[in-house]
Structure formats: C-alpha cells, structure tokens
Amino acid sequence: MTQFEDELSPPFEIIEPAVWRAPIIFNSPHSGSVYPREFLAASRIDQAALRRSEDSFMDEIIADLTGRGFPIVRVNFPRSYVDVNREPYELDPRMFAGRLPSFANTRSMRVAGGLGTIPRVVGDGQEIYFERLDVEDALNRIESLYKPYHRALRRLINKAHQAFGTVILVDCHSMPSVGVTRDEPRRPDVVIGDRYGTSCASLLPDVVEETLTGLGYSAGRNKPYAGGFITEHYGNPASGLHTIQLELNRAIYMDERRRERGPQFRKVADDFMVLAEALAAIPLDSLGPFQAAAE
Image 1 (cartoon, rainbow, N blue to C red):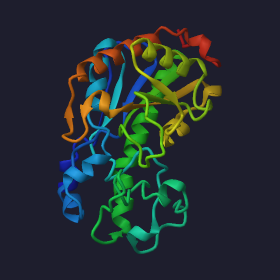
Image 2 (image 1 turned 30 degrees about the vertical axis):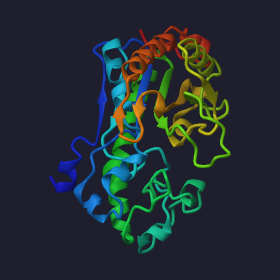
Image 3 (image 1 turned 45 degrees about the horizontal axis):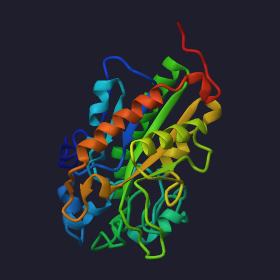
Image 4 (image 1 turned 120 degrees about the vertical axis):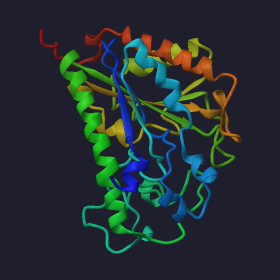
C-alpha cells in the first residue's frame, strides 16, 4: 500500500443498516476532511483555507440514520482534492503540465469557475496550487478515488432498486450562509434541488419542504443550487430512480468562522431523522414508475 492509499484508507464508507427501513440512501460527498500530506505540501494555501470548501459535519448529521434503517455514504477525502460531484473528467487545462486526454471536458461552467473534478480554487476563489500538476496525477486521483466511489454508489442504488422497485438518493450538502455577491438575497435555511423538476418525482421536494418548514426552517428551491452531477446523473424518475439535493445553511448548525459545531447541531441532526421518516412514509407506488420487488 502506498502512502497515498494508506492516508486515505478508507477513501469512502458505505454503512448499511441490518434491515433497510425504506429504499432511501443518504449521501455526503463533500464532508471529507482527510488531507493527504503531498496535497498539503503542493498547496499555496493552508489547511484552514482548504477546509472552506468542506460541507463540514454533514456526515455527522446523517450518521445516526443508519440506526433508523437508512444506509449512508460518506466520502473521507476532501472535495478540494477530488470532487465526486462532477463529471469524471471535468478538467482545466490551465492547471496541468502536459496534454489532457481528448475525452476531458475542458469547457464546462464548473471548469471555468475553477471547480472541476480536480478543483483549481477553493470555495471562496483562492487558488490552491503553487504550480501546475502532472496530468498523470489527476488521472490517478480519478482512477483511485472518483471511480471506485461511483461504482460503489451505483451498486448500492441498484441493490435498493432491485429490492424495493424504486430508490431515493438524498444528496446532502451545506452552503455558506452568505453568497459571493451582496446582490444575492438572504439564503434560506435549506435549498432543495431537483434539477428544476427533472431528477425526482414532484412529490419528494413537496414532502421535504412541508416537513422542514413544519420544523421551523425556511426553504427555497433550486436557487442558487439546483443539484450537481450526482443529482443529475443518478436521477431518472421514469426508471424509478429519484435523486434530490439538500443544501443546509451552515449558520443553522455550525460556527462558520471557527468551523465548530453550533448549539443547534443536535437539533438539526434530530430533525434529519424526522425528515427521513417522512420520506419513508411515502407510498412507493406514488412516486411514478414502480417495479414490484421480487418475492
């Protein structure tokens, strides 16, 4: 095992309950905080600055759901190292010494913003690296971390789909409490993303919004976050595959400046359990195309 593999062992975790309560998977792809030493050495900014891109503590907020019968997925490496919520090869040619493969997507809006599969900047726009990276380094990260994660997630989705006839993937993220520009309106407590109605049955965001507003949270839909690659890629309601993205306002559960859990952390985690139960109570055949599970 190389130092790289040893530091990131395991790179991600899938924790399944003994008995599934419902075909609902909670996924935290951006809460990873294990920073490889070579990555830190190559970075022009310190670890505290790198951590601004993390969805800090989201994996902890969903951790107790396994005890209620819901599987969870969490990524341990940071999104600033490899971002699994992107296409596999969204790469910025300005970052690399050498020629990228012809199949790389070098022109996406996310690449233009510096937030590709191998990000060029952290969330607040600071450049990460001192110098250009070797192309082979990027490809190795994708082969060693990105692809195994997506293979494992796909297997888990297929397992649920075969057992229940449908599946709901809840992609759990967090957002800064204030936007990049002063013109952006005040952000709500949670933004529900369904790719403008394309990634899941319309009943799901309705239930999420009704449940969370009933618990005292303010909610918005699709702005400024409609859902990333995971929501878009795995959401196929016509086949019984439903994905929904939840972006929690970090101010409701943590101290953003100190990056510490806030006084409402436990309440937010408990309210996620209420949300999970509300989703589990939805009759599966009300979500649209449904394949009865084998006896």
